[in-house]
Length: 65
Image (cartoon, rainbow, N blue to C red; front, side, top):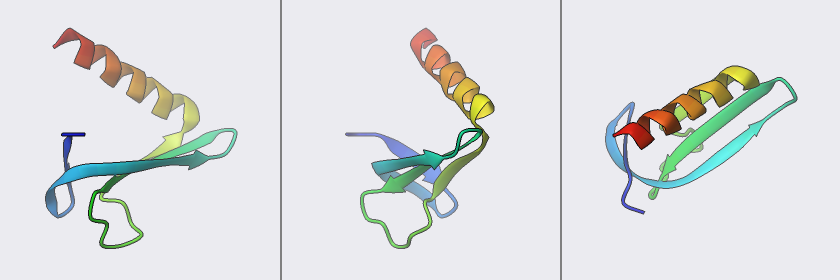
């Protein structure tokens, strides 16, 4: 993949993602190809319905570009 992301330490190349949570809570972690720690540079965390709505909104916006 040729996706670039911007995290706390600047730009990085997307490597993988981890999704977890519970019935009501979701966490999406986006890691670089060269992970330097267990902490993902980009983390989306919150109530599952809100995380899902955000991701759907992003998909819609990407489709409109």
